[in-house]
Image (tube, rainbow, N blue to C red; front, side, top):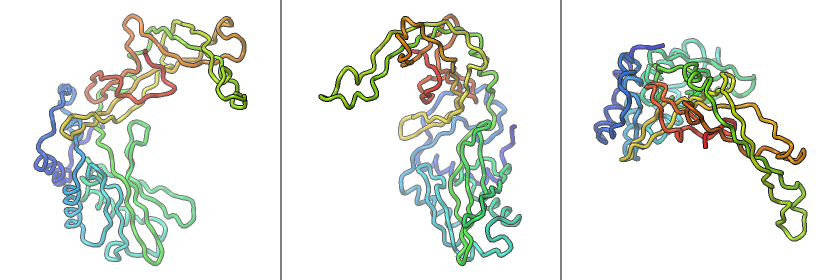
Length: 333
């Protein structure tokens, strides 16, 4: 769902302004502009998100700006991007005991801390403060209080969260941990369309087989012997046609170096296949002790190499090396 940029985000522009004024503009990064036309999400409109690792002086400047906007005693730790890693206070002028809700959050408290996150949105990576919604997560009875969370998802996967914990007792306190990721809310390619790129495509699967080392080889006097080494038994090939059930689509935020200390984050879908195991012929298996050592798939015809890396915001096909390795997903050699 697309949402317009809120006024609160416009007011919280000092972080972006500092990036430009303190260090100059980031190096250019070519992206396909057409899909972003009309994307009013504040992250998508400036996609891909570009940042740099901040020097200590700039981190200190952000802490000073936070202190100026938020009176009282706070303990603030920022990550390398200048976003909140940990924030806590036991200052009685900020946190007061609530006998009616000693281990949880009242509606008034949720409203108060929601407003606090909105007022400090840029330090928490919140790009759309108007849609902010805190979720109270009940925790089993005991000394640990209930927790309020601001959760961020890519599809069904929890990607990041801001957690607000309430400490009851004689000296009540509040601890806020984490920040959100720069995820654009207006992707232009969905999982079904991504999976369809592989369905019906043909590959040749090459499987290598080995006889494993003997389990008790370490007990052999004299150290290393042939019994301590896996024995290659050969390879088999099989033609495979991809079905929808074989396709996996994993969403990842990947960091791309731009040079000059700048980086960009892109929202990728890494598409791969997970094929049912093939049964080795007996002439290769050499008995029940043989086992699969490795498997790769080679594209034929118009089938793409695997894994397939697609930027879901722009629709561009990117270098497959950006996708993290997966032990379950087969790869093209």
